[in-house]
Image (cartoon, one colour):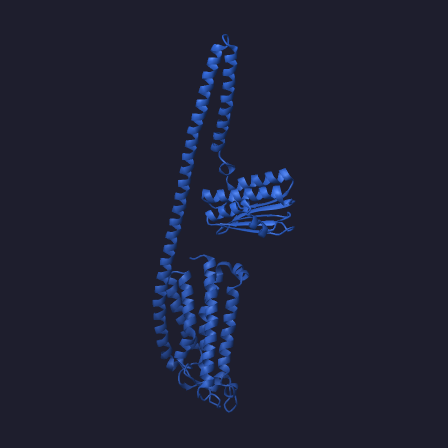
Length: 443
C-alpha cells in the first residue's frame, strides 16, 4: 500500500476529474438538446428510450389521460441527472480535501470514497438516464458512456491502492451492481440482453486495463523499494566512511600525541639528568638546564592539551542527539536565568552522523545567540520527525532585521544555512525587531 499522503492526493485528483467530466457532459447535453432539431418541446408520450419501447406511465404513478411534468418539461430528467451527480461529486470533493474527515475515518477513509465514486454513477445512470428525452445518448450506449470515464477513474483508484485480485473483484462487482439495478428497475426485461452485452464488454475492458495498471503500480512499488534500499545502503556506506575517516584522524592524532609527549618527556629527562650531573660542579649551568626543562615542560603540556582536545569526543557522540541538545539548552537556561520549554521526540529515527552533527551545531549556534544577544526571557527548543526531521528554536527576545543581517553578511546565519544545505536541508529564519526570533531547520 502507498502512503496516506499519496493516496489522499490521488483522491483529490479524482474529485477534480469527476467535476470536470460532469461539466463537460452538461455542456454537451446542452448543445444536443437545445441546438439540434430534436422533438423535445412537444407533448411527447413517456417512453423508455433505452429499449426503444413504450414505458407504461402507470409505473411512474401517472394515471392515463392526466398531464405529467415530463410532458410539460421533457428536460427535467436531464436537470435531475446533473443535480444528483453534481451533488455527489461535490460531497466527494469536500471529503477528499477535508483533513478532519480523513482523521475521523482513519483507514476507512479511502475505501468509503472509492465506494462512493464506484456506485454513485451507476445508480444515478440506471435510475435517471433511461428517462432522458429522445436523443443520441438517450439509450443503453449513452448510459454506458455517461458513467464509463468516472468508473475508469475509480478503477485506477482501486488498482493504485489494492492488489490485482481486488481490481478484478471491483470490475465484476460494478457490473453485478448495474445489472441488478437494471433487473429490479422498471426496464423491460425482454431487452435486457443489450445491457448484458455492454456489461460484458465493459467488464473485460476493466479487467484488461486493471491488470495493466496493477502491473505498473507493482513495478512502481518495486522500484521505490529498491530505491529505498539503495538509499539506506548509501547512507550506511557514507556513515561507515565517515566513521573510518574519524578513526583514521584519531589514529593520526594519537601518533602526534605520542610523538610530542614522548619527545618532550625524553628531552626533559635528558635535561634533568644533565642538571643533576652539574648540580655540584656549576650552579649557573644547572640553573640554565632547569630553565630549559621548565620551558620544554610547558611546551609539552600545551601540545598534550591540544592533542587531547582534538581526541576528546563531543557531547553529541557521548550522549546522542536528544541529550546533547537538552544539555546545551538547560545549560544556557541555567547560566542566563531563562525559562526553557523542551519538546524532543524520543526515540528519534536513525539519522546519519553528518545529519546529527548538523542539527546539533545549528542548535548550539541558535542557543548561543539567544543567550548572548536576544535579551530573551523565554525560549523553546522542539525536535520531531514525521517523514522529515524538524528542529524549531524560538525566543521572545528583541529580534533583528533580517534584511540588515543579510546585507552585513552575518557569518553565524551564513554558516547555519551552509550546514543545512550540505545535508539537503532548509533553514528558515523569521525575526522582527521587538518580536523575537524563530529558526526552523527541516531535513
